[in-house]
Length: 401
Image 1 (cartoon, rainbow, N blue to C red):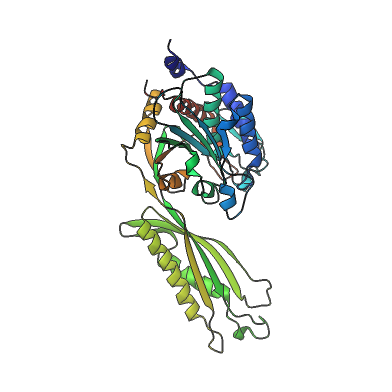
Image 2 (cartoon, rainbow, N blue to C red):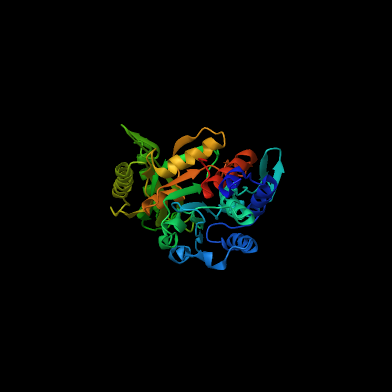
């Protein structure tokens, strides 16, 4: 049997793969605090004999608005087979709700022991899929094309790690695969774009009991603007003719006392759409609604408050062709596992959004995550195992043998 045939026939060690993902999910690592999980991954790779010179970190954390303990972890291997370089990636950070998770197996699912925490399958399952592939290659000395593995930071706070990725460390990969999703047969080839909004409202303070008429409430300005947006279909699900998108006001903060007419209020919001022009339209409608509201609220002396509006791109939308090499290669791997590839478009952001913007068309594959960002989160073990096998096929270029 040739070494390539042997690699193709090799099955993932289910016991080891299950223990790996269980161990990784138990390590805390919310956005900006990925130091422990990065150290665990590096430690396992060193123990497996991976040369130190192939392991590096970039400085994405130094460019992040929150700082952070570490940058993106990048492992780059020369190939033992000729072929285009392949990149396998996942993100290390979890949402804060996952801190303290104790993974417990029950039937064909893994869930958090406590009902107060999420599990962290998003995206420790993805981290485990690509780590399992690399460890298996090292353990069995499997032939492989040139490979790059990336464990990204700060995905959950707006794709910050991949946005600031040092792309020069990647080795110019031609086929790129990201694991961050539910079903192993899923191939996400596109995702929406997201723009953030920072709206600051300045009212006029006054004593809420003695002279409320002299005040201009920032809360009232905000309330009238929000009602305007909601009534006119610009908040929540936004459908205007053939254009669709969404918007959400997620954070409001202001005021310090109940006996003072609120003098200031800060709002953080977002707008999403696959159509960049329509996303800009949503942003503009928000801006106009708050400006109208500020003009309409006056105190007894005829004075008004004011509004400042700032928008910024979190990530742009992308859509890959069905004929993109990474899409076709992923389809072959799923088919080889007996699956039926399902091409999907996402309404949430993925690290693949910024990978596409960096010039690396990337498909996102499922790895068993379910009910993410909630205390009901579970990992579907069968899909996770299937994802591990698909990851190994892609890493060894045996998906179409």
